[in-house]
Image 1 (tube, each protein chain N blue to C red):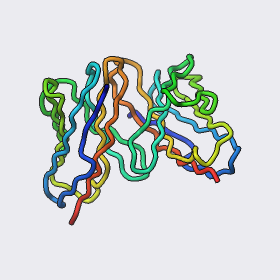
Image 2: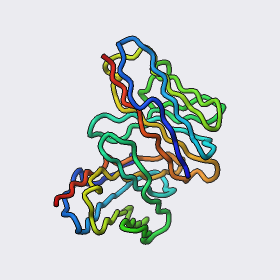
Image 3: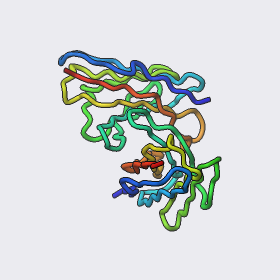
Length: 117
Length: 109
């Protein structure tokens, strides 16, 4: 149980392109989804927390107009990197937490490796 | 401030036992998680401790002492596939996960 699917797994595109990443909880309802960014050999950096039906809460230093998050249903959240530039190249990972106690573990998608040329 | 400390890197031998420590200082405590992350992959959930003591799950065990702000992950009968980074994360009073930088575990034959 607790499967999270993230798509696409890898994106290579030109500078200026907008890229959408999908995160789906396959076998449970995710009231809260999290978006992380990870640079090589570094720890996870939380970018934003999204709750179904409400606006995402962004961490300090994360541009909300640059990283658009939509959590339209209990099983789907999307992250759109708008007008991506080479410095946006990174490993982006989503996670989801189900209904119930807030101290449930987060279950991660497989991540999206984004490379901007 | 909030802080999670764990060693940057550890080396162990196949078949042996290794203990990865994690100390924390957070605003409130709602549990401690251990995750395993292989290079280039997303983290996978290993264990959750919210009460003091040892939780055993197969070859992996996790221990928590809330009074000391301390946890460890114990890996027994090490296998080459256990080579990975191990992330310690604490859930604070706002149910936010505070992540450690991870411990890279290298297993040698």
